[in-house]
Image 1 (cartoon, rainbow, N blue to C red):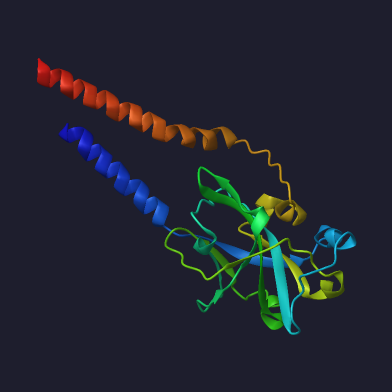
Image 2: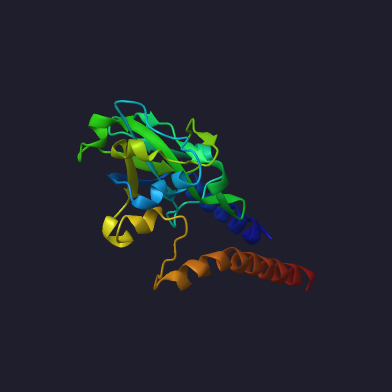
Length: 207
């Protein structure tokens, strides 16, 4: 029994620390693709950056993303300043009660957006606390195209062209996908092992 309790406590501590640890990824701003402005052909645009600022928009669905709320994601500058995000409400996708994909935009000064060494980064995890907000469907204004960007995170070579990382629907062929799936089985295997240990301990106590 003591062994089972010890293992439960150890696993709880491990997964608790893992859930709290923040993940980070470098951000790059790229020219906005044509698909960003397709919705404006059917509905009146409702989103454009103010003068002197650039709007960066895109879909964020890193395989490591798994957070409990939109306030657990932040864009940071090199000096540690946090930039608020406007999250498109209907784009937030949950898996097992945790957010794994969402679209959002943020605003940066035009000088910062054009600086290749600006040092923008994404940070997410349960120890991140951000003052983000939700907005309705984002319809970008084509008239402001020169001040609208797509964002790309992490290693650009892994994502291929920028459009593949900001598309509404994304299909990725990954040779390691089978290994990702096995992570979902890990909690079940752990529970089964603990139950077996407990059963053996009870049997020995009764002998």
